[in-house]
Image 1: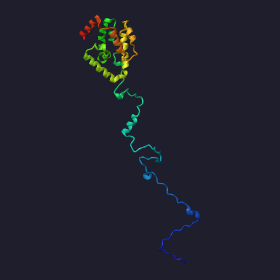
Image 2: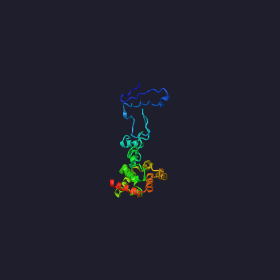
Image 3: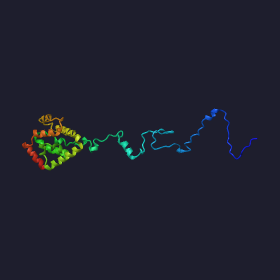
Image 4: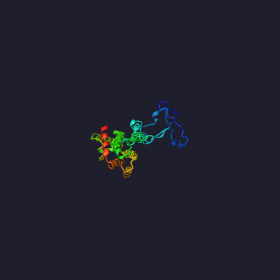
Length: 239
């Protein structure tokens, strides 16, 4: 009879039915549930190449900096202008485009009073023209040597300052301003046939066309004429 020692632990023996059971892999436990343990996936802020369930593979160009920071938003918005908005012309230099409406309108009846019908009316023409152009645009007609004698030294200093200020803002529109005044002078001198030669010799296609034709008019119709001297005296008395 076999005697069993109850003091020693007994090993449970399983019968081996086949030799392949010795090499059979053990069954792996099921993966933990995401809802049960949120720490199952190690998610970093950079997350380069991490395949997150339900989100796909993250882009590799993400960084640790918050993309919604004000500096980042300003950098994105400042890279290109918004649709429908045209940047101001030369805005970085403090300039803006000159508007023709700032010049006295052609419909102003004061232009008709500046019409020249004879050589003797030249002084009156100058006087009324300076009044019409006012201090804002009178400087256009006081740039040449002969024209400087039409104003006092104090007025000439004002005209020099006005020209410098205007050119600082609208230097790219100087040709437009010259062309407008040239056309007005051409209309005002149309009644005098001899003035046509002056305008033909000094066309509007040249730079500073208004200044050059004005100097040519002062040369062709000098103010030292006897009748002109009388008008110059009257102009000084009325000024």
